[in-house]
Image 1: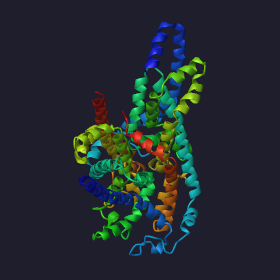
Image 2: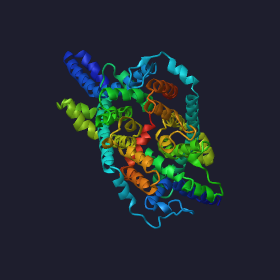
Image 3: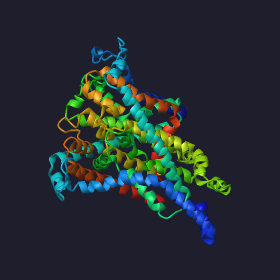
Length: 305
Length: 277
């Protein structure tokens, strides 16, 4: 930063340098151009397009027909959409809160002196390695009525649960998978945050006779606050996008119990070919993500003060 | 005395807990692999068998022949490699531009690129599909690759890394008369190796995992990626659990290998995804 600043101030004094720095700027533009082009065509253009399509009726066969805000009016009165939004919110809350607690707890655990730490940490990390579709397939098998999950419940004297066949349990099945897969991911982020805390704080607390629980409350938590807030926002955005697992495991059922918003958008667009309506739902999802993004930007700016 | 007993208590709590966590983390892997060697009629016999008995060696071959999994595997590999290389190249170029040059609009461009990190595909998939349709790209490799050939995360990661790289080496090469492109390829890229490795592994994992997008734009069998092949296999052979677990295991294997051989970069990419300051 400092060096490139001095180049510019030098170039202002010397006309010959100016052309060199002009050439350099041209090079800088040239190497960022492909990225800008791709991002414009495949991110921003679709984003703007989504707003336009959300104001039309479009079935991919006849040309789009402009209907103003009709899609939005229909949506807020559509019990299926409201139900789907409720399922999504339930999924986000019930999967994210345990993930925050568990991933932080695991990170604290792995930040200690442990024998064979690498082995334990790698094993804990493995859920992140499993692809989403494989995850859905394997858990469908494990959730089978006579499957391994119910067998383990039986060890503890619990009754078998009709996981994917009951509208009461199916969302819980999806939530448990979400927790299983997301926890080690955020554990890694928390571990990075923990390792950035200087060891001398703990040494000083040790001398003062503070126990590990007090150390956690008065050193770890306050110093980890930026990481905690970031993980909270990240995990919520990721959870809002859950798609492959409910689609493959239940297709949104039974009785719409697991029809999260992205799944409903997908089905509206590519099974029922109601592009306008699906785009209107996307706008709702976008608004939800935006709220969290703004929340996050505010966190950043607070962190910089 | 007090110290010693609390230490023992800690050990007695910690290690059983660790084994429990590992059990939960590894159970689906173990179950997938062991059941791919079970016969279908012993699959749900009560009480459940933890070891396959008798061992069924045929599931892998039968599943592989039931659908064109070789093709799906190659498609997935090709698409993931192309997306990864694209992100490494374009991400490092853009990150270099944003970190070591000064020009009009740099800050705005950076924020624009950064903002795409918050724009999930689920929001834009409908219009993106329409754009791909206009380009004539459904059922093509272009359609699978080009929209994801550069991501905000890659640019961000490379920029952050390059800011910490001293500019003296670049300046010295300029004085020696090296061209800008040579400086990028010969000096900047080698300096970025750790960041490139982390980004490469991270991107490859995400690309290998991609499901919703291929599901939307691929209808031809010859273009199916592995996740599509596996989910299709599940809907058409839903009761052949041994074969289903076999293809699931093969779909997981490249990720497991990647993790074991490039563990550091694998973990670093994820750790960096949480350091956005």
